[in-house]
Amino acid sequence: MSKLLNNVINDGRFKQLVGLLEDIIKHVMISNEGKIRIIDGYKREVNPHVKKKKVKDCTPICGGRGWYEIDHGRDKYSVNVRNEISCPCRRYEVSGIPCSHMISALLAKN
Image (tube, rainbow, N blue to C red; front, side, top):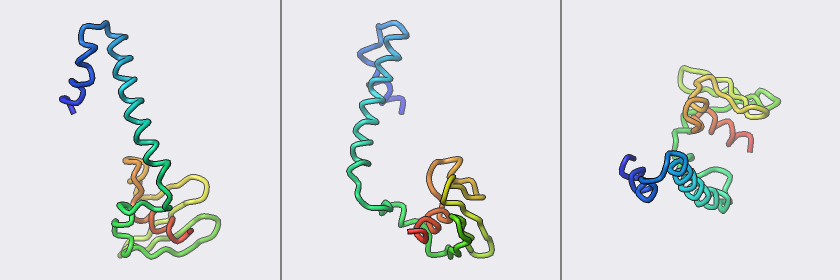
């Protein structure tokens, strides 16, 4: 990560702090624009990498109005996929990556 940042700020090393920060912001915006174009071009509902997660161990049961109860071994999770997507395991809130319970509920919804 530090080598990447050094390459980005190489041209702006002798600028003042504000100019250096503007160069970093510009680089991040250009990088994000490329990623957004790739994501916008994606046509499937669920990414294949996401499907590889162990959703086969999760059994969704519809509770109505966007709520699903997910049986995952000995544990049970109540997942909301309607208004605010949430799961009691809180992996989605921490990392931003859906957990297997949430993926199972989303696949059952569709």
